[in-house]
Length: 334
Image (cartoon, rainbow, N blue to C red; front, side):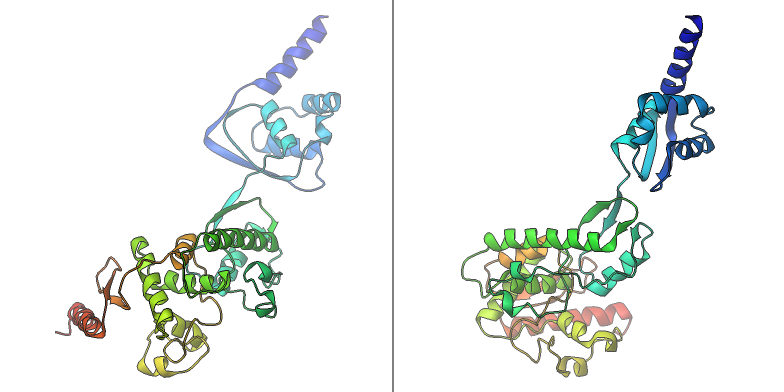
């Protein structure tokens, strides 16, 4: 009887003694195929346990040793061995945040994904099966498109280590479809946009034109009004996108005259695809533009990144002159 009592007390002490990890959280990775004994060795190396044998016996008696799940676990705070084992059994793996940033291009997103140590399958083809039929009422219009630009929603996602990149892209694409169709269903009346995809194209231009939250709807309003008036959008980011690797960071008059499918100075209407990854706010702005009389805007040249909006060409030319004068003054060319 005394021996049994000693054994119970030993198990209790091993399982429930406090382990304080407030100052030093620990990651433990259980690889696929690893057994409970191998996991115990890892815990011992981390200084979390001293004696492996009693825990092997405990695992055999409770059959918990066969229930642990592979994955990366974060051990933190005040805990004990019993709670740690239960965490391994529940599969409560650590989820790494990965942020898709607004305004990135698909190639920049690809670079970020491949550079991350979290994801697996670095050679995956990023041209996964896009659900074109959910981007347009006429799916045949887009069925043959290969450009995946703009088709992943920028936000912060959580993934366990070794998640395949294809899973990341599918989640981000599904999130984009959900957001896009929600905003499409709540769009303003009488927009010259005939599919969710066209709204996505416009949203990508808005995303590249401004980082100022309260300007998005106003810039959307300018572009919507121009589309209604059959005016060319004349937006620099589309020209830059069309130039691709030929753009050297300095947009010239020659660049503006260089015709590509994306040059909105030489061509009417929207470009053939998005030019970047628009965030939800830009998507919402595209479908709910401000109703104002502005048909021009230009940067103010101030550090806040804001723009000045104009109702006619004379006002706009004056705003452009003010911008150029400010830039010259800042550069010291007075």
